[in-house]
Image 1 (cartoon, helix red, strand yellow):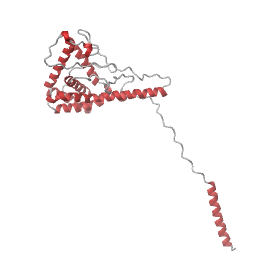
Image 2 (image 1 turned 120 degrees about the horizontal axis):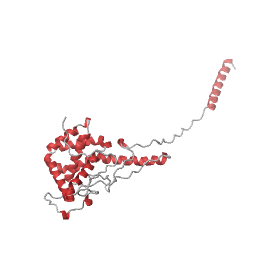
Image 3 (image 1 turned 90 degrees about the horizontal axis):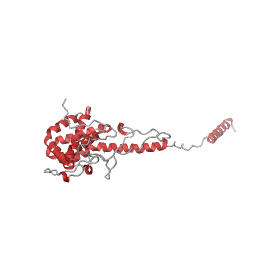
Length: 284
């Protein structure tokens, strides 16, 4: 065989051998690695919206809503509670929410007659329910309502709603105000209902965290619910004449209502605030 042919065959055999050697040394394809177990957060849950630890919240009623001092109110009382809520907004909402103060002053002027009539009707209801003790009973509920709408963690979400409701009230005639009051009150209360739901969820997550990671740390994960807030009395006719012998006992309509001549005691468990009254906010 010629030397050149021998060399060509040798190179061919060498190439085949090299390929066989490489194939024999190749590593089999590995299976994909098993993913790590999901990471479970061990950080203690925090209260929503900057609220405090151990805060008590109201109980849930049969309709799924949290019990508030706005439940079961008449249209006149709803309108007065709306006015109190907008008063709180005027005092609490600043910066980009400054319109709340301007709107409140305008509402007092534009709807002065309608608000005066609602106030007289609410006074009449308390007179029918409590007689001479009606003023104190009303002041008690007013304080509870003011403090309800002034709950600090909810201010940020409450202010835009108050401005929206205030704008609607200013845009409507006074003759429609009473009919709109229940809807307005529901809208103003919604941020607080949402806060209570968020806090209840926080308590649930806190209880789960405690059971898994708390160790020897003890936290209160089920604060005692707030007692049901007082309720406003029912509506009476405009021609009502009080009859002391037929008056409903205060306790039947307003839990823990003050008796005539007795001191008024208001409990605000989480955020004790100074009671506010009807306030006109001077324009700057």
